Image 1 (spheres, one colour):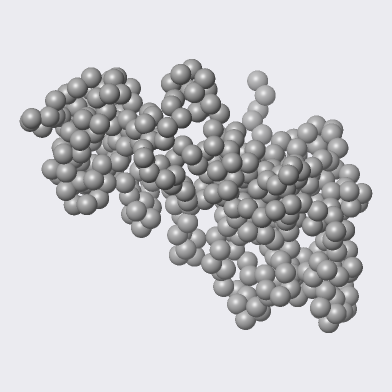
Image 2 (cartoon, rainbow, N blue to C red):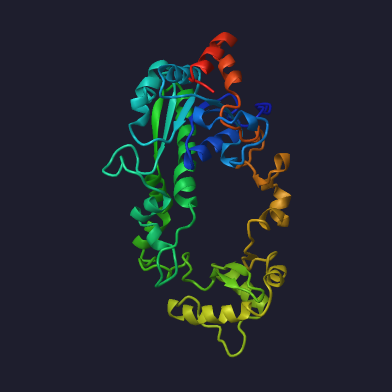
Length: 391
């Protein structure tokens, strides 16, 4: 029997070096996930954003945690050369500019793969690197709209509801970029050469909606909004207001879980009826009956009765309450390094756990340290600073 390998320090991606060209939203999220899992991520920030007086204190943008930062003027030849020097010994580069921007800077895939043929070049955009919309601006809501996903989110007879920016930016964007980067790294470690990972939010959002397309094909999903099983149409899969104005989330889909919910709550109140829930024609009346019942007690009273059962009902917590819930607290879903509360790294690994290695840096906080690692002496670093190439 083969003995298990010893635990690797710093997570399963320990030893992977990533260069991140600073951006916003999904690109930094992907880099954060990779840093949480042990990668050494170097963030290249803009020189105009450097505030030395803030060094030594955590930057408030938690998406930038786990990094070191150097500030470089990418519009200068010397600045671009600094980045190519970083790329030479890196495993991954991640950028989130519009298509063609890094090419014009001399830092596109061809430029970087020329100095490092094993490089994984991760690109994060909304529309992708090609197609009619590729050159234009967009945001999360736009990518959801064109893929059909936004159409399906909201109440019946009401306008679509933006689901914050979690589906496009982070689920369909940053998470798919992180997965793509790791897959391409796996290929390189298996003997392959470097390649470009084109992560587009329209691709990722469409991918996330695969099950809905399946249900439509099986005749189990209507195109109308808010009349289906998982979109608020079903009375046994929704959030209900309680006596104190707070909400209880109910997800009793399977018959046995619904039966448990009925048994424990005493549903229905007179004169309401326990209609057949499998007939969507009964859903409006059932919803009214459940709503009337749930308004008879506070949210926490219902939670005390239902949460630790198979009724699939839990309280809807706000941002402040969530980290203090006993289950999330027991699992350490939220952590507070240096007193800053934030979600913990995920997923979990039994032998190579991830961790938040350092707080979010301020732009340029590690410029000298990182340039020295590249082999630049103090005089060269001083000249680069004097010339405004770095900060």
